[in-house]
Image (cartoon, rainbow, N blue to C red; front, side, top):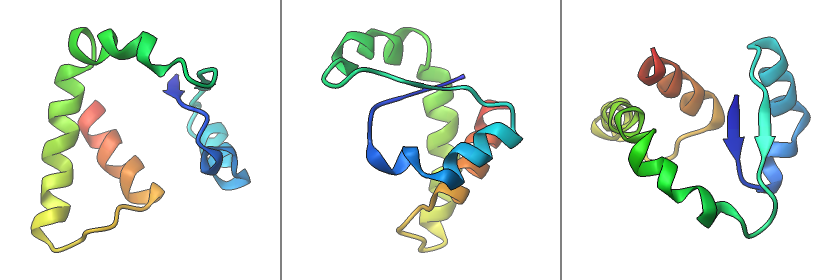
Length: 81
């Protein structure tokens, strides 16, 4: 499951197809409600956030300053595993 905000680019056909191919269930939070889940950032996801940050550091050191959705998913998968 992937919990996300209502950002428009997440509604693309490419994103939906990627989620379907990889058995990801995208869950969209209602507008202006993400503040209610911020406690999860600290309590549940801090280890994942640190691991993801390390993956992104590798891209930054390679002078990649824009992360596409594909690069995001690659880095996230490694961090998650």
